[in-house]
Figure 1 (cartoon, rainbow, N blue to C red):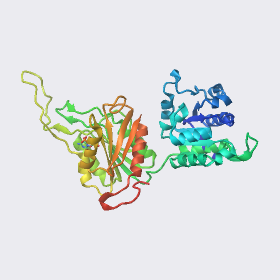
Figure 2: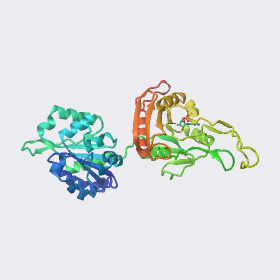
Figure 3: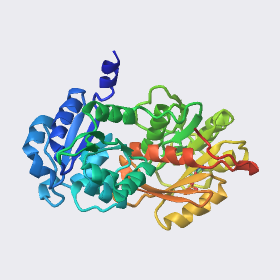
Figure 4: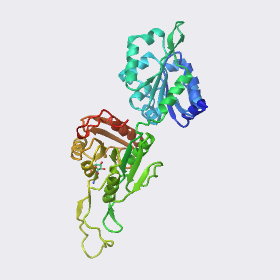
Length: 416
Ligand code: C5P
């Protein structure tokens, strides 16, 4: 049954339900019931005005979770950051004219409006207000602004309003709102037909049979990219250095150890690919000679390691590319943007993801990362601290939006 199919879409999803101060706030109680019944875990955030219509306790009992109402309550532990970070979708129902105005201009003076600025997950807004307010040019302008930024706004329905008027202003029906949430959570398949080649993890360069030179890369960013690209419909090949992460299902995984092996695997799949993302932390230098036997400590002085450059895989691929989009990473400890810009040009890349690995809570080994995406065409997109799984989607979206201007040809959208 269709109803059953739709219900399954919400199982295990995390929805943040924003309730603002409209008389229709009581309908949010029933919406919460419908969402939780469909399997979603719902965190409710109320504006102060909303609490005048329905008590937080009602939502608390029905959602089984604490309700957030105040940006300044100590025990809320930065809920304006943690709720949206964990949410798969945010639904604001009912949304007042005041809320629409705040959301449109980015005025962040309570938990709900602040949350909107800290998330990129789908936003569904169901306004409810008096008919004259809904049709007011200011409200319509805000609705237009929010829609142009990707928010899904469910026009209110016509009928008797609290004011006694019969006009357009009633909160969209519960079924419509639930359906909009389900639609927003449907997987994006904007990488369908694309063949994405990703490298991940460190490389290990042998010194002798038991020792090697390596780095702190965990592979988490590259693996997150592989999973996100797969989920968005791509065929994915992941060339990975030694890491301790589970192999992602539905992805062709090639295990390598050295930069040389990674270069060979990447080259072998390069022609096949349409998008290449080098997230691996490849060795820049390797021992010139690998000792046949374990180096012994003893009477002699400590051995001196002579190093030679390892192959620069990206530069090599860039030199032989046809129409692939090439994306590199720049893990820097200083002068982030300047160094990344130099690499973008030197390696002939389309995009480079520059991350400051000294930033607390980000970078090597962490589940989170903060970065700036620089493009060959001069755009800069800062990505504040977020989960690597989330950042993977942001990087893929930047790839989708990147104009392909390779070898003089200029088609509007590279991946669609
Ligand atoms: O020059 P740097 O190593 O900082 O450049 C980083 C980017 O180049 C990353 O995308 C990394 O995967 C790639 N790289 C490479 N081959 C190397 C070193 C780095 O492809 N030998």
